[in-house]
Length: 267
Image 1: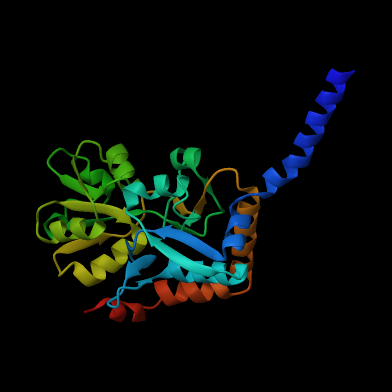
Image 2 (image 1 turned 90 degrees about the horizontal axis):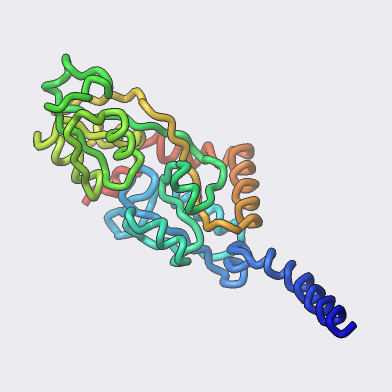
């Protein structure tokens, strides 16, 4: 009888503790703390970048501000190098990633994604001298070409998978890659369409051609740690509301349909 009583007592205590465990996810932590901490790498125009005042601005930043406002908390942006951004999220350096991150099965094994908030794809900038020879990514799939992308990105994955015969070169930043392309050190650079469109307009100096037909399908999503069902549900509902009340369209137009923000980057 004593053993049965003890067992029932233990089960009762476990059942009492279970609801607390389930509810104690990141959403609760944010509300208790009064601060939403968002990790991003400010080098991906127009999603996140640093202006001449040293402040991080961009499409993702404006969305993060809206999220924090809806939660009734302050916003803290945590600038983080891309190659360490997922480990930083997993070790709770911040609450979520908002940094133009493509949703992939490999990343999804480590972290959870909210519903995609925008869809992009890989595009290519090529040296102008190859205008007649290179019409798509398939034409670059030759050993003689030096094709580059940014380290640890889906651009790198796409290049290695679909342009595997070319000599691959990786860069720490997309700015370095475009600069070396303009200077003739590489033949082509592969990266996300939104950034490439802006880079072509600002930095090509008439030396490049832009293959603006995306050759991959890449949905971008906000990332959080696994085991946060309440937080994930909140983010998905927030995004649905933003897309249906016109707020999302206004933010999108500000960063993708206008170039007024470019002046803030000029020194």
